[in-house]
Amino acid sequence: MATDLSSIFDRCYDRALGVEHTAGSYADHSADHTAEQGAAPKTGGPLAGLRVLETATVLAGPAVGMFLAECGARVLKLEPPSGDVTRQWTLPEENPSQGRSAYFCSVNWGKASLRSLLTDPDEKKVFRRLLSEADVLISNNLPHQEKDLGLDWEALHALNPRLIAARINGYGSSSSRPGYDSLVQAESGYVSMNGPIGGPGHKMPVALMDVLAAHQLKEALLLALLQRGQDGMGREVRVSLLDAGLASLSNQATNWWMGGVEARPMGSEHPNIVPYGSTFQCQDGQWLTLAVGNNAQFERTCTALQLQPDTAWASPTGRLMDKANLLGQLQDCFARHGRAYWLEILEAHRVPAAPVNDVSQALASPAALRLQLKDGPLYGLRTAVFEGVYGPNPPQTLAPPPAFPQHSLADMARTLFS
Image (cartoon, rainbow, N blue to C red):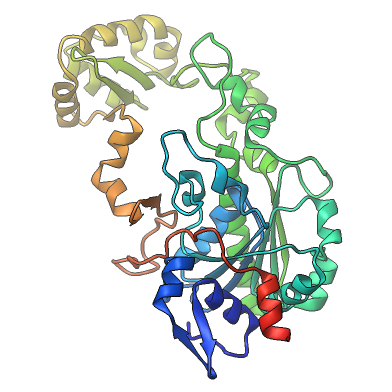
């Protein structure tokens, strides 16, 4: 996208990247550029030309902003004066670079960033100009804060009728409760059914509610952009962490409504079929898992393991009712050889199986390496992993997560309105 010199948005975006406006044109001053952001504007992609203003912090909202940046949009992130709080969420083992923690790097590639204090009158003047030119606003303010900041839908739509306001919060537009992933995991049932068999519930070790809500908001945004292409009008789209979590309960929800079966911690087992998700330790101490979903696959499993099937195992229901005995016999089989041996045998018999990898092993796979983002000590994973939109080869360049912003909207106000 070519910079529009009359656009306040583009001037703020380029200033955040260290591209200064001189003598009626923009010049890339590499020294400033490296010191401030260490990034270059990303061009191309199906959303090239789209201007996105991101005031959201933490994970869910920024994940949506990164997705749009991966698709070619210009994403300008406005951070509180102290920065997005996740800049400070560093591990003891971590050596953060310019306030960029590993957590922050997970969802902030491809963006430019400025500090902002939206209650400041001068900054508010620039902010309103940014809103008037933006295509999308991503925010995660509580509903009562939206009015105070001038981000309520009536004010936004009057200022820019084409703007799409994408909101994400914990419990919906009628609640002022702040949303935290661990709390929503507990309230939406996930903690109660996750963990070791017979043990207490556990939350997922990924902020799953944030991830699910981000995906919902991406879908809503893309639909809103499609509708705007038809009628020229912006829209307000909202997603809550709670709704996203509940909507993703899937078969566990219908198991309760239709069968009265309450999900309980089952380790990696499946409530409806066995062996599906079951894990087995092999002779070398390594683990593998099976995903046997039908009778034909189960028969091939018994053949591969040289296991004489019990008549009780002839149907999925029978296998489920004799689960403990079946799993015990399968474990005895797997204990006879190492994992590599069994994976080769199972693949030869077309039995769905996989190694239980550590995260480090998973990230060393060719599939993960294709998605890897790297810039010096900074790493990340692409989130737009679909095929077909870009053609056979997606763009390989994406700006690294922005360093702690050196400039603020107040600086821009002095430059633009002095």
